[in-house]
Length: 402
Image 1 (cartoon, rainbow, N blue to C red):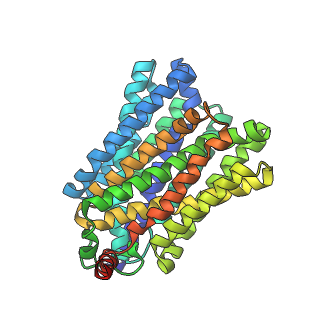
Image 2: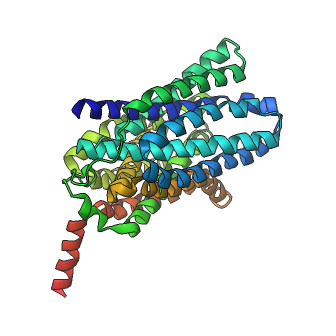
Image 3: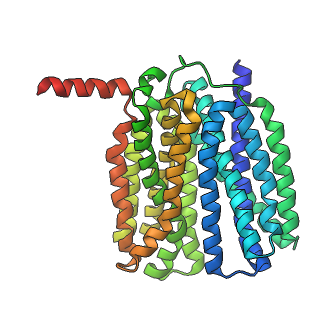
């Protein structure tokens, strides 16, 4: 069993890297596809929303499907479909065909995203200790691989359709090869729950019920809204507020992304020692401090430090929320993860737009104050990760004192 569990963990890493690579390959080819189709930036922005909507639908479909058929069936299917769908945007020849292609690609990506996270919950349950953040870190590695491959293909002047087709074929092969190592079913209900940081039984976690899952989803929305805002506005902040060059401004996002990756590589060990509640509470507090530094100290080194703190603080939050959702009821891990991931994804899409709307009223750096508020709120709301028996004892104690 130990060997098969290690193989299942390795296979889960493979699917996270695969997802990051496929999505990253599309991202690095956006300019080429835009030129091929002949659409404006504004039209492309609307088409990217279609991709997001497709992903959102795919997440909601894949969650219950994973619970019913098992991750061993849905994860490789999602990987194969996502790999095959990658070629579709490259073949589009007009706005409508590109919209259809992005809808299908988003749908398949959403299916792979939720199903692999549900399987990651089962692997973590079987291990009895936190491993979720490491999986999310390897997703970022996939994005880096896609960027390097895209840069190499561009330097060699390869046809973008050819490189997307090659990546798609490789993705399908990898998805099929890794499938045999996935867990056949969810682990037994008696396994310890690493998400609580204290070995809480799954039966105790179920006591939180659906309401707890939706609270986790709201926290995911706030955290991922902050992440989405940083992705799109960190470099522009450096240019508009500090007057930095484009090259220097790019390092703002680079600093944030690097800190996110490093934080996720370390978060599992920290969670194993201090618990996921501490990761979420103090991580969100650190992120609040970082973005506040960005707002109030318009000095380049301080801003870089602020973005690093912001990324480091946020890095472990989403994996802990996904993990907690899955452990609330292991038999419905896919459904619960889809709820948290779906609402979180809405936040990721809305973040850039919300900050953009606020810039009509206040300067960009002042608009970031919303992110501080959201991070502080998340730190306060982190108590939802407290083990269910502990929450019950606190309610009983409060009732007894009245």
